[in-house]
Length: 119
Image 1 (cartoon, rainbow, N blue to C red):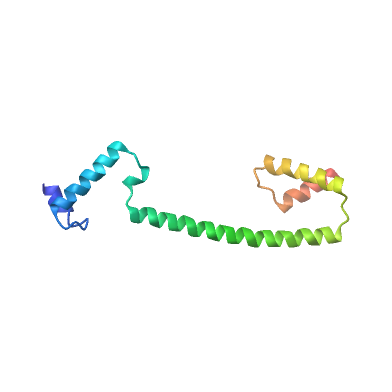
Image 2 (tube, rainbow, N blue to C red; image 1 turned 90 degrees about the vertical axis):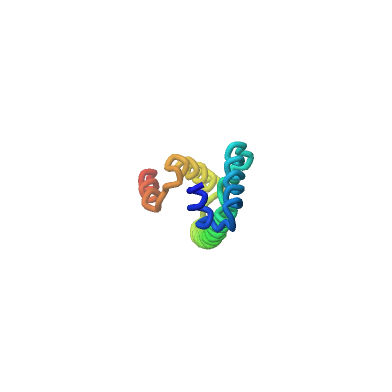
């Protein structure tokens, strides 16, 4: 009862009975574990969902801008270089292999080294 007296006001409970009721509900939900989120307060879950949603929105905006810049670059390259379809397909296959091999960590320096090695 000393702990109940100490904690019930700190947790914004109106009475000791309310605190005990919430403690029992939490304990029972932890025993049954029907809902993994039942251990976390609703406000915390809501906040985390908002953070993830905002992060997703920002990432999508950045990816869109990157896609536009890449499309521009590809159009400039296509306009200034005459590359036949067969060479393009072979290059695509080689690039897929190289990107997989490097786990996506492929830089312009890597491309220059790779092109110099093919000459």
